[in-house]
Image 1: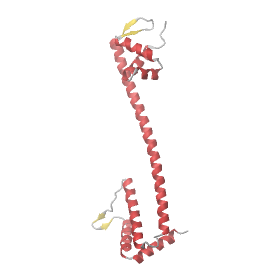
Image 2: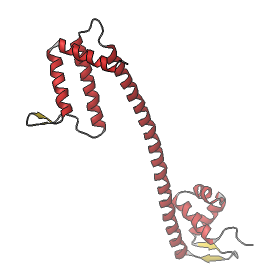
Image 3: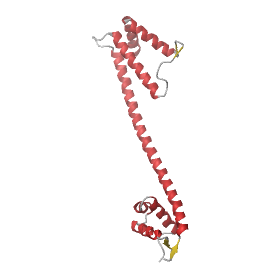
Length: 195
């Protein structure tokens, strides 16, 4: 009676079984688990059955082939695992990034609403504007941090580095010193933003 599986299929199945288990080898190759176990038992005795049903000693040759195929199976499984993990991490990272961007959009909308509404009646305008500018500064600082840029204002021998930093510094100093100037800035901002 001719064997249903070739010698190469037997060797591959045995390699997978040695690398993992008879159950795993059965799942991957389609060879029944009982057959895999029988082959493993026969192979332990350094014997295998040829297509004519004769007992043949394949000790060194079969063992070397099994080792090579087992190594290939392990490498293939590791590669598949890496690809699966990479896909899961990528998909999850995209989900998280989308949630973060949604939160940033909400924060921008809320910031605009707060700026257009201005301070409450019982809240000093200068203090409100100072707090608002501080919150904006923190937002810029955190954006810089997340994008890998420097997070602190860099000064070169007492001079500010960029024009934007100079403007920010001047406005901050003016707002801290005079409530009337803070009111003017607030009104100018509202006029620019109102449709």
